[in-house]
Amino acid sequence: MSDTDYRIIIREREDFDIGQILECGQTFRYRRQADGYRVFAGDKTCTVTQSREEAIVACEECDADFWKNYFDLQTDYGVVKRSLRPLPYMEEAIACGKGIRILRQDHWETLICFILSANNRLPRIMGIVDRLCARLGEDCGGYHAFPTPERMARENAAFYRELGAGYRAEYLEKTARAVADGFDLKKLEEADNASARGALRTLAGVGPKVADCILLYGYHRTEAIPVDTWIKKAYAQICADGCRNTEAMRRRLEEIYGSFGGFAQQYLFYYQRQKRDT
DNA sequence: TCCCAGGCAAGGC
DNA sequence: GCCTTGCATGGG
Image (cartoon, rainbow, N blue to C red; front, side, top):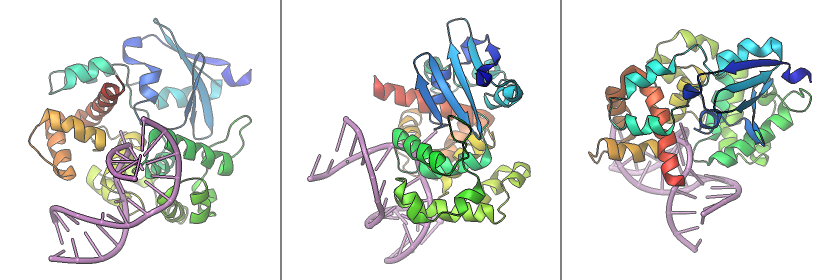
């Protein structure tokens, strides 16, 4: 099998749990398999399995560096967790999701996926993204790539509504056309956080929360804190100040968690959802 | 049935 | 500026 001829072995299982990494809501392109997970990103795919001792990423050899970067393997999460543990609510949140990592995802793919995430549920988002790739993505032999801006710009809102995007269909049409027409996602890598956020928010369907998701998951701006319904629940317990304003909550959380805010947000999100499930 | 989901945009003040 | 409402769709 040419698609699994190379293996990346991860022995720091304390800092890598593929289930937690994929199911903390930062990506929608994966499938659970009997023995692990199949993961998709851009036009690439890999398979991840893990045991008590190690995790194994199986991929094409030429994609090894891509996946090492994607899973953020160069970052020492021991440092992240040691820095966060003393801060409010982090001891228990980290204990719950200690194998979480923040993926380094593609700007465009993250942009589109998180436009679809607005007021939506994870399984439904995954279904829409799946159909989007199947219909518009390049056939890579057994799976489909994420579609390009140019390809998506050729479809209209009616098409995306048919995929099940609901009222977000208009956003996809407008934003795909904006990017295909020259909105430079790459250039935002050099911008400071506030101006990158402002630029993203000019795109249809990108509000404060979606912009923060794109910054954190698509640009690895680990100080960005997306405030969604789950973080609001967590906030009520962390601060208990009766605050209802999302922007004020975000600022307060940034003060509390500082430059590791994005990591803190992931631990909180996962912890809050686990508590719901149990 | 009603409520909610990783909210956004538009309209009213 | 801040606050409210409508919005597609599906599951509990």
